Length: 99
Image (cartoon, rainbow, N blue to C red):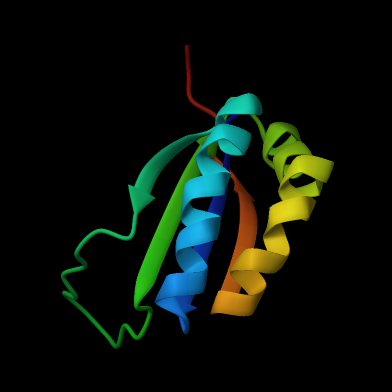
């Protein structure tokens, strides 16, 4: 079952965030992750939406998403994001599909 890492971020320092934005893709790829959404335009259809930047990463499993997040490689660059943005990050299991 696929696992997804979803981040709702507000970038507070665009120049500092750039270092993270450049450093993170190879680490994501190392753990088999891929971007589904990377800060694209959001069209609100219902309710309130105050998330300036949405990122969704797909992994083969929740375990792979956890291994990415907990890896020394990601933990080394995580302070770059934490210093340049605020928000929330969750890991969620996908649905089991028939087949």
